[in-house]
Length: 127
Image (cartoon, helix red, strand yellow):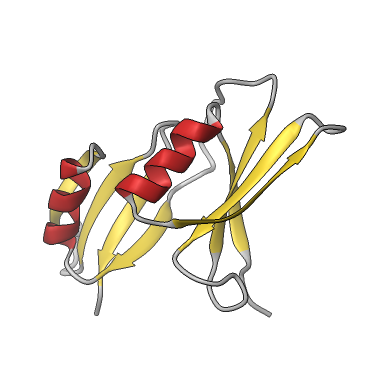
């Protein structure tokens, strides 16, 4: 078994695709409209889905905003250099909500960025 994808609902699919491709430099792997269900799915990631995990963005055509809720935590991305990654993300218009630095009660370097819908994405330095 392996993890295939994580699904999040978004209020503006084009805005979210732009964020994940331009700010976090993911690739749009596939996108499909489902007219009978009135929704669109877009899968993004850093490589072929047969080998890597993807993020599934679900856009329900009649909904432009969601409450994230208290159970969702964050998506985590491994990066070579958290300090460099946060600088690059800021330069591409990304919103850093926790600057790069050691995690609380630990030494692992982390940072957090927020996507346009308010989802938190943790950047974790390679070990």
